[in-house]
Image (cartoon, rainbow, N blue to C red; front, top):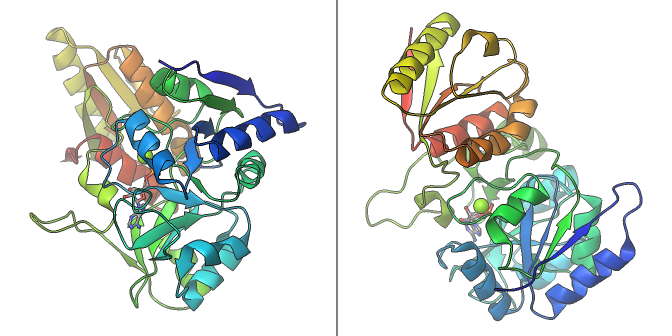
Amino acid sequence: MKKTKFAVLDEKNPDRTIIEEAGITIKNGGLVAFPTETVYGLGGDALQSASSRKIYAAKGRPCDNPLIVHICRWEDIEKIAVRIPAAAVKLADAFWPGPLTMILEKSALVPAETTGGLSTVAVRMPSHPAALALIAAAGGYVAAPSANTSGRPSPTRAEHVREDLDGRIDMIVDGGGTEIGLESTIVDLTEPVPVILRPGFVTKEMMEEVLQTAVEVDRSLPAAGQAPRAPGMKYRHYAPRGKMTVVSGDREAVIRTIGRLAAEKRTAGERVGVICTDETKPFYEADCIASAGGGMDAEAAARHLYEILRSFDSRQVTYIYSEAFPGEGIGQAVMNRLLKAAGHHILEVS
Ligand code: AMP
Ligand code: MG
């Protein structure tokens, strides 16, 4: 058991000494959790294989599930990626710093441990000022998966990191709640047609507009014996402890169905959680009822989803029923994470 240091950043007046200490810790082979605009990341030096091994161990993450390398200056990409396509330059121009991760061919400098043995590397430049400063202080290349125990929802607050990783890492930098609340979009640029491997805040339409070419979405769940393109996709991610069902369809029917299922389970002695909207919240009776925000506000749903799932876990909810959310813009990413959390258990009602 390690002693994990907690440091709170003042948003308006970020303390350089905290950033410097975090940077030195990473340079020396240690692990620091820090805020980004998407979720909290667990950072280690991406160019030290021992640091990447420590990240997998701290998270309990399978070591063939590669890490995203975070950079803070465009020029730095040339050290870790080769044959960078024109599309990468255009997408970086439009969306970096920001919530977009690009898969590129890796250089020899990136250890196999960081990329889970793959010949490609995932690269992102986050926009959070503290994240950028920390990456610079750490030497420029920070491998940072989400700072949760593998299989739990990603952390959107420093307290979530503490729940999962206290005593397992060197330091947690608390920068308050994250702005977006869902992980970055991942786009694979190693094939002629860009493919979205994970939906996020930057959508297919946004990238098509910039590239002026078609962008595909990888919908396939990996077939038996076939290596998935984003190795993380074969694992059940974002899993709450309760058994979760997403209910989709006509609003009245959704309310009626969730109401009935919740009542049945509660009669059977289960603890039920419901994920709904501000407008539908008054219609439910359950042990925990959480609104993800206004019904039309997909950004609020993105920001609140993981925190709601964690609160259900801590209140020992055994069954979760969630309304489906409109799948436009970041709503696509919200539905992607909800369905993963539910193990793709969806009920269509009318
Ligand atoms: P996390 O950092 O927790 O958001 O997880 C990183 C995600 O990026 C995982 O789903 C990985 O499988 C995916 N990823 C990282 N590197 C690569 C790569 N080289 N090719 C495809 N997917 C990757
Ligand atoms: Mg993750």
